[in-house]
Image (tube, rainbow, N blue to C red; front, side, top):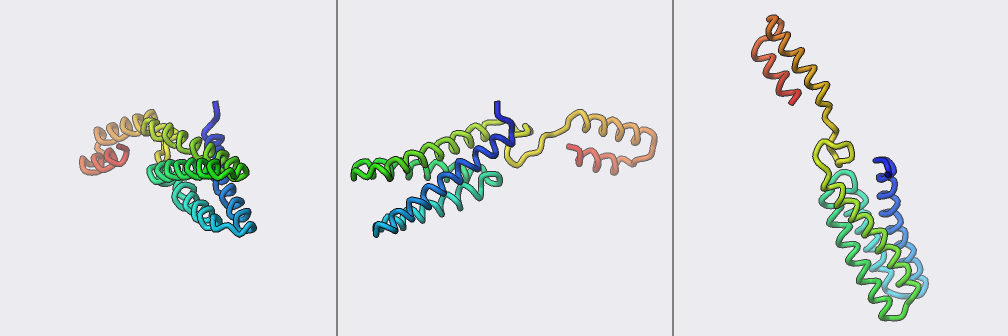
Length: 159
């Protein structure tokens, strides 16, 4: 089973691969004089701004961005198949696979319970350490070292 850093690397690489695929597509279409380079460039930029930049900070935006990008990649794939452009159809199916993988991984990550080490933006709570600190606070309150107000303030900080 992949570790958290392996999953991080896989997600980063999959998104970067999709961006690179559309950057290469833009270059190929520009060199052939096709206006599709504008679509490919805009698509690569959209994947960067909505998925890659939000991958570890805004799970909802990254997930929706990956879903929309996967749908767009699927549409481009079908259009290229219809037009008989097998090179671009093959390129788009690889990008589609990358984006579906990213979307699937983000869905799995969203379903993790809060407080797990793999949950985006949430540090795991150390309950044993907090219990020991609460016990120490109780002892300090009973011995008169802490006032009731100080005790309550520290207790709320620990959660």
